[in-house]
Length: 160
Length: 189
Image 1: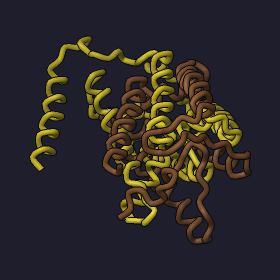
Image 2: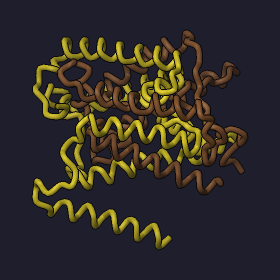
Image 3: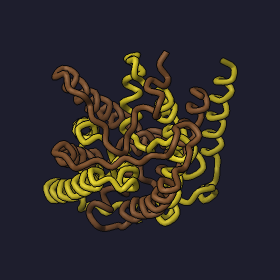
């Protein structure tokens, strides 16, 4: 189970990285041309990715599809809270300044751009800083609807 | 151990083959059209839900990598494999496409007259703010922007609209203040 999931994770990660690099989403110019409205590329790509996955996930959820490793397929829909806005503003600013986002930064490094490593290190520092801040304050770290740290029913998957 | 060594040799070989290749012999176009890359990404999102009931996020993979390094009891190891997979996938696409070109990156900033250390500092600070913001918001461009919105999550739609809007405004400010946009660039059709 554990090993199978690791392989699945590696494969899906590879597919993800492949599409990002093939679409040059790891390229500063691709991101900035879109953000300056000189190109439609990133908007079109994200729009179609959502356009394909949203209806399919909706249908699969309604059918109560059983997944291979994670029980019945379940989608999460959270209410909007303040931290979504605050985090969104910070993330958007950083995204524009660094000209890359978390997954494309890895693909950038893989394409041979050494400064991709600086972006990856910076991301680690930023994520860790927030973790540390919340841990010091003894507050729970909330995850968004696009992130899940556990598989249903297997709370500590991968732990010894 | 020999398995890893063999893999390493294969990668080195692939890289050296690329260098000797004629330009224009790439298996992949310079940039996959968005109407192909977009649906492919959408199918990957659906696929990971069908197999594992998990979203195709990215910032969470960084978090799990930190947790794994720290040996936290609630770490999720498969996300580390996924993290490594993103790098390997990017490497494969680069080898099949334009080739792995060892360079600094951020040509637009160099073209605007910024020194290499200045670019490094800007990228580092930008990435720290981005990472911090992703953890505050609970996701990034893939987590909230694609997977969350595809789950019809109000929180994700609002987060995505917020970071998109902010990025457009900050890019506008950067362009006006620093002349970054005055340089005509390749990329992004």
